[in-house]
Image (cartoon, rainbow, N blue to C red; front, side, top):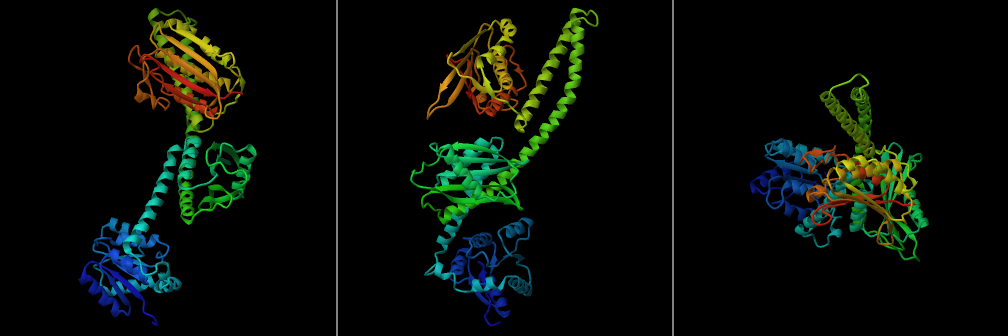
Length: 555
């Protein structure tokens, strides 16, 4: 060979270093040595070898760390690394492979085998890479040599930063059931690592549906938002997505640009998985704004990890669709026999099939009550599964809220009289028409009033207040509805979970759990489907009572 191949041997044992050095010199290689990983780092950046042969168990910086550091630095990633160790457990091989080692050998291997394996790795390394590694071309990047500890610290800092970004993005998987919240949390994190005027997150939801989440300044006009959308989408590869229906979510935030400066594309990256389009991200800047190399790298990491989030979101939606279809089939199979049972029980109870005794009437009444409860539970499960799978459709339109509330409250007169409860309804005369689906919102009010009735002592009071929200720059607009009772209230630990599924409260009268635990979860889903929100406050006053509040859209 015209130019000897250089091998860097790294081992904290002087004896082992000498043995390996002699064997490799005998095979015609040029050999350099280092006593530990930290010393090896300094030598590699000062004079890069053609290949590294390193022990694993060493002080300061072990072989796994040395290998991982070299493979994570683009400057040294192409230098082959062989790891030597006495350990032969499966997990040691796993860590060796995942550290990026080109080969993993046991120290017990005979020396001729080690020499042949070294040559085998060199033979499979492209000559251009080997020539680059053995040159001094790395030196200009690190004039006067390099401080090993500084270099290691820099690489570790970058790995930690990338890992932090990955972890933050993967946290978004906890919000796949709520696109608005997912987008809000994504933009919050994006704003922490980059400066921009507007940004977009495009997600392929599957079944020819896509969601475009935009973050724009509050001052942006509709035309300017449309311009941001057009510019961002044009930068992503959407050639195969022309038939997809696109849902747009706009979140107001971000930096307000100077009116005199144009908006330009700052960053754009489509997200693919095995040539399958998953979505993309884009950032819009102003004037001559540019991204630093570090920020661009961070955004590449963001896009890569978002691919995992989008895949998870699509899988969850597929499962929810399957679950909704299964529940729909199950509900149909259960509802038919239950309806028959209730029908025959009604015939028995009203004497159509002959007179029955008082005791028999009581037993039949229990059957009727049980059927009603089961049918209600079945309907709740069906509706909730539809809501979660996005199959529940609402048809909002101009609706007088007074009529909806009156219809629901009038249907409860008998129950209110039975418990000697007073119901007061106060509706502001200036209240506008609500932009709601009357049927679905009736269900919300029915659930809320039913709960108030169940958990208020006889002689108590339930109040419904409805009034317009003034709106403005810092407050919400629409219609607010408060449903307040004089019960004992809801414990603080329950309030955090009360709108989640299967959260049952305890009746004040018999200390037993009542209801299916689905009613409030359904209320929340329906209200959010209208673009509104719902929350609870308890106690209201004098250490008692609960107030459920809703914000609903107005026409």
